[in-house]
Image 1 (cartoon, rainbow, N blue to C red):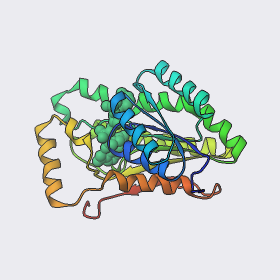
Image 2 (image 1 turned 45 degrees about the vertical axis):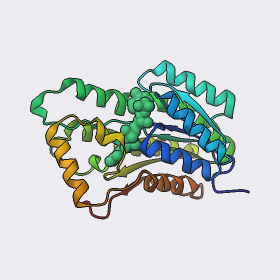
Image 3 (image 1 turned 180 degrees about the vertical axis):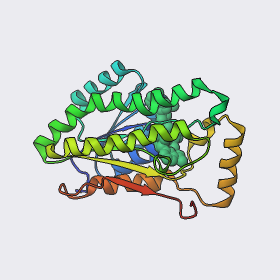
Amino acid sequence: MSTSLSGRVAVVTGASSGIGEATAEHLAGLGAQVAVLARRAERLDDLVARIERAGGRAVALAADVTDAAAVRAAAERVAAELGGADLLFNNAGVMLPAPIEELAAGQWQRQIDLNVTGLMNVIGAFVPQLVRAAGERGVADLINTSSIAAQNIFPNFAVYSGTKAFVTHLSRHLRAELGAKNVRVSAIEPGIVGTELQGHVTDEGARAWLEGSKQEMEWLTPQDVAQTVGFVASLPPRANLQQVTIMPTGQA
Ligand code: NDP
C-alpha cells in the first residue's frame, strides 16, 4: 500500500523517548524507512522491534549527538544501509530552567552543547544527504525541534529559550539557503508536551511551576507533535511550512 511517505528515508534524533519516539513510529506508519538515533541503545532496539512488528523498516543508531565523529559515522550507516536520508527530524534536546543568579554553569553548558552544538553536528552530517536526495527526488525535509520558548518569555528559562531562539532563527536562514535546492526547512515550536523532558529539571521553583501547569491544563502528547511532523513532510514539494507553533489549548 502506498502512503504519504512511501519511499522516504527519515532520520529521527532523540528517538528513545517522548516526541522523537512518537514521531519515528508515526513516520514509519506513513510509510517511511526510519533511522532512530539517541544514546540509549536498548530503548532504540525496542522501538525498532515495534516498528518492524507493525510492518515497517527501521535501523537503530546509538550515538551521542554532541560527538561529531559519532554522528558522522551514523550518517555513513544511513547512507550504506538505507541509501541516504531525505527527511531529518533534528529533535534531541534538553531543558534545564533555573534562575540565572544560581550560576548553574554546568546546566547552561549542557543545554548549549546539546540544543545548539548537537543540533549543528546532525545538520553537518546529514545535509549533504538531504541535498543529494532533493536533487534526485525533487524534495527533502530538514525539520528542527524548537519551542514556544523561542518566541515567548518564561522567567528562569533564559538559557533554554536562547538555545531554541537559535534553532528557530537558524531554520529560517537555512530555509532561504537550501530552498533553492528543494530542501524544505521547518521549525516546530511546541508548547508543553508531557515527556521525560520535565523529569530532568532539578530547580525546585521550575519543578513547582511545571507541576502547577500540569494541574491547570491538559498538556500536549508526543503523538500530537508527531502528527504535525508527518503533516509537514507530507505536503506537496512546492509547499514549505516554515514555522509551526503547536500549543496545548489551555496554555497562554
Ligand atoms: P525527552 O527527554 O523525552 O527526549 C529527549 C531525547 O533526546 C531522548 O530521546 C534522549 O535520548 C535524546 N538525547 C538527549 N541527549 C542526547 C545526546 N547527547 N545525544 C543523542 N540524543 C540525546 O524530551 P522531549 O521529547 O520532550 O524533547 C524533544 C525535543 O522537544 C527537545 O528538543 C525539546 O527541547 C523539545 N521540546 C519539548 C517540549 C516539551 O514540553 N516536552 C516543548 C517544546 C520543545 P537518550 O537519553 O537516550 O540519548
